[in-house]
Length: 257
Image (tube, rainbow, N blue to C red; front, side, top):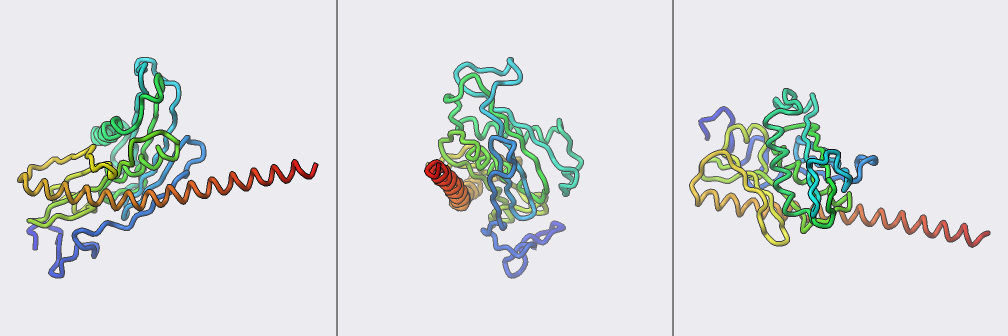
């Protein structure tokens, strides 16, 4: 048992929320949750819920940020007052939220095919609705889905997960109490190629442990990609079905005239 306040693993090898070390939290992925945006999604992982809206490509609001050969990416992060776990004390301009926004932007800059949208802006708004650990990974997963919903070209899905280390045992997809007690690594990867776009850690670790956690994170990212891809295909199928129904109805109407 750990000497920390939280019992990370009990004698049966279960975590405080009854998950096994490599077990992800329950997930829910939704697309098109904000009809007024060009793309949107809501991702729930455990008790953490994040909503992302995407606007663009559009004309940049600030000319100073215009690049002539590609789109610029702007990320803004906010937290609902009721989000919990101390997040309600964070407001726009908060240093931690700015760090999350910068990490999201840096993660997606090499993945979004910005050269297809010169002299334009892609605006990503992230809203944390409820917070119980894994805000950054959930935000990255939600951003991927929102960009896909907006029809913005990506090299691949970007999926993300957090990994912690308890003694010598890695743990996947940390809750807030686990994040507070354990060294934590956040990994974002392109599952198709295995490339890593983000590896963020604020605690020192032995290189062997770090490599073990990194490989575990990349594998978990592949699992998340399968789940997210299923949601995207279902969404695409429903859109095609609605379009087909509308076309057939129009043809029937034209034929009856």
